[in-house]
Image (cartoon, rainbow, N blue to C red; front, top):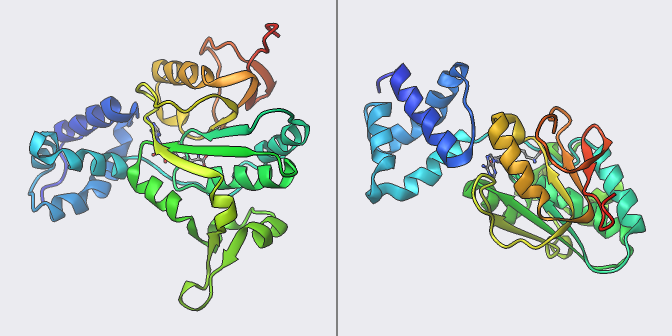
Length: 269
Ligand SMILES: C[S@@+](CC[C@H](N)C(=O)[O-])C[C@H]1O[C@@H](n2cnc3c(N)ncnc32)[C@H](O)[C@@H]1O
């Protein structure tokens, strides 16, 4: 197999930018060639240029999704950035009225939406709720639906949640956990590309948009944050990753903390 050339790398940079809004720096060349190498082998192609032509042809449309899945970074774990879950618990304890709805807008393999569901099941005291998890990667959404994880992803999960909401693997499944069915029934998954028009997801009391904007340029961030914020109910909250910011994005949200924002209520404040 030929090593990736600069011009082939630029083709994949343009591909993933158009498909997912992800800006890949030149330093990511080795990462791109490493992640795609197994597809060149599987498709019996000699060069990255040939693979680019292959996935661009109408006859191999499914290969586009495989390449998108490989070029996204999906690292996640249960109760990542725990302060957002403390905040969620506090607002859930005070929630009244209709079903509480939460959206994990780049949910990867599902640990984030299941963590949200655990907090809501705990703190809503029997009131109805729904969690929606979306991602661009179908491979991750399939993993999310299976709800079966290595224990290492749950190191930050509170122990009582682990006992209440997870089944411990035994025998061949030793070292893994399965999110229990009762909790899974509150969580649904759908594919949604944040840079395209969204499916009808309804309105939300809280949205977690975490650790995905880091891959976007400023114009894409602005577009995505406006699109996501439009699905918040008045007085709904947006949580972003601790290393992300809404600075200069011109979005009408009120900061509650550096990574939590509130949509103005009906009275405009
Ligand atoms: C690092 S994970 C973040 C997971 C989780 N939110 C967290 O904070 O742990 C980033 C996720 O964003 C998804 N992603 C990247 N671009 C996307 C897009 N344009 N639309 C939807 N999801 C996207 C990736 O597939 C990946 O699963």
